[in-house]
Length: 390
Image 1 (cartoon, helix red, strand yellow):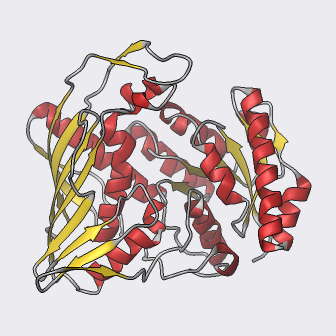
Image 2 (cartoon, rainbow, N blue to C red; image 1 turned 180 degrees about the vertical axis):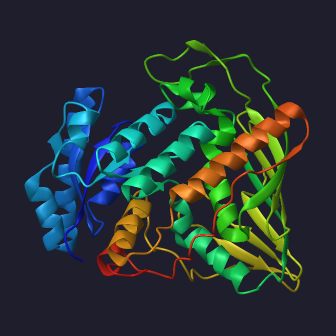
């Protein structure tokens, strides 16, 4: 394996716990430092990481896990201070979406690789700046979601690639909820520029669709904003009202490079639905794909008159938040492209922004970027046995 990639975490908010639980058990990674605008939150994250490393040591009796726990996790005074540390090779960017680009560019300027939460940035210009800075510096940029690397999406992809549904002709992708304010104590950022159901949840669905069907070349869109205000439903600020600044119900048709057409619905305005998450329909059959916001889930094939489950046949088994970063670390050592890449994230962002543009203009528009389909993930076991796999 060689030396682990040393990780500095910027942003110790709600999503960080999912990463902290996973990083401790992933070979090839070691969390060395954490920072947050709220120092108490950063200190709590550091303690959580150290406890997770000790638990991983007990569970796996791994020398690497023992090293992770023994060396501890430093709390840096600022993002700049963290990026200047000699024991940070890569920055894990878990800040709010509005700060993604600034943190990524600062990390690249400091000579650090970057892996961040989605979306890559809020604008095409910021995304291009990130990719340009990384290319000039010879550094890697990765971006969530990495859920698409799990057995759910990857088993479905293998079924498509193996021709089990014939030639793909269409797909559907639906994400419906009444809104995140019901459970999130500080939900305003979901309803400000850079937020909304498409930019928040669309990366999961669109990344899965690119894995399944390839990049998107044209979109047609429509969108609405039924409510001007929302009310916080939980936490110490429950009952407070805030303004809605983005469209909260977005629909569209996506034309993939191979000719398949996807019908997309992303909404914060649906109280209940029985819609499937993702389905892919081909000339010889249909495929039911699990929720792309999860790593696992049932994959079912309809061919010959009945739905039948497909056993997991591809993807990282037991995966969770952070596997995209681990894949990037392996790719660095192997000298190959990483799968949760900035190129894919930039294309997904461009598709979403073009869809919103098309909705505003009430038309269809070409998508200005493209990307390669990431390499498929072969069926890989638990992380303690997956070191060195492609």
